[in-house]
Length: 281
Image (tube, rainbow, N blue to C red; front, side, top):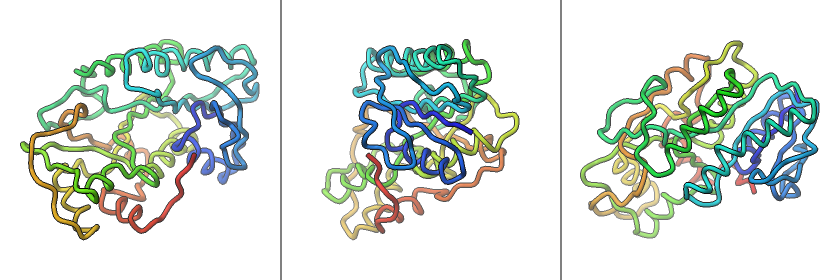
């Protein structure tokens, strides 16, 4: 199968390497295609502008772009308009794309009371950018009703060490009152995408991409402090500006036969601290 990854950054590169190892031909579309490792074939393209010259033999499309800033304008350009540009360019190329997967976000949920969330929970975001993620999914499904939306929680992994750095440098604060956090290791996120693209006969239109443990943030911070051998962070008001307080279920994804390499933050962060994995450009 021929896979096109639009927005081939860190996550897309890991996906591309996995797909190529599984025998698929992979093209990665990004502004700086020369940064992509072999055997991914780099294609130059800016997803905020009209596109041309996309492969006519594309069978599978993954849209994995991320905006350069957290503003409504950037979210609209990237998430709402970007997929339209890619699909239109593939139509012009004469491609007959069999499966489309959109990398979305659990930010479509505005839950802030610590309750459980799954794919049936209403998408009622409270942030300024969340409604654009909801609009992006609806626009995509209007054009491709069979498209898959994988709503990822916070992706962490090699090179994504913001939380580790905060704890190591004494800048972390344990929220009071406590809040739940949801995450997925980058490698598991890439594996989940490839699994949904190639190993599920009749996929649903939406899945939550999270690990098995929607852990209390304070629990994660204390764990990291212990692993790093530094004092536990102090307790204080929640300093996060987004994320809410929710516990996301991964039952639907698990039900497809997918298994996690890093089922909780413990396995994932221990791998990072041990220096395992590769940071992609």
